[in-house]
Length: 266
Image (cartoon, rainbow, N blue to C red; front, side, top):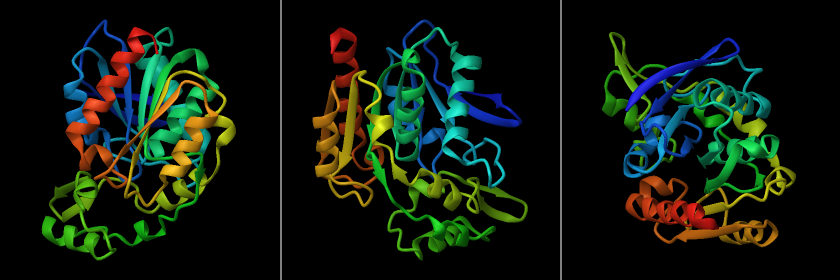
């Protein structure tokens, strides 16, 4: 695994390259608060693929944007620049996206059909209405990692692991890498009805849903599969919104099976 960088206009964005020169390309896109490393176990398990994971703007080791540049078109432009500069536009990608990353994946595909081989969408649908305003109240600095964890728990978050993957320490204390003040703005842009984008493509798609998710529900996921050609779905009975955390091995198996079937002819 190697960390590298590219530029999307004036922003320096980070990505992880898990290797596999000459193999088909799989791009992994995390959700709000996440970073490229969230898919580390998934990436390392897919030996037959050249796997990349992107730190999307405002997350991980990538630059933060100003508040006017967390729009839908900004995230899509970043993926377009990644494709152009890193993988080469001649390569068709499979994109796996969680939450924010899932919408970015299918909206990028809707605008770049010839560059996307298939899509794997983790626990997000076509109709989104969420509120991340609490994020701006996360502390700028905490004296210890335990104190930072306790603060995150105080917002009703029982398991702060996903957030703490973005924690880092310097001489002043512990901090979070994601752009906590602008993630509410990013979510406002993400909210909406995106059926047209989701139905614009007909490449193979796998929808993954956590039965206990607070973000979407099984009826909505099934409705997408019913309306969109070449679409299957899988419900994880013991998962919430972060399936790749809650049922990692099961998640890897379902994704691997889909990728295998897709390469044989979906």
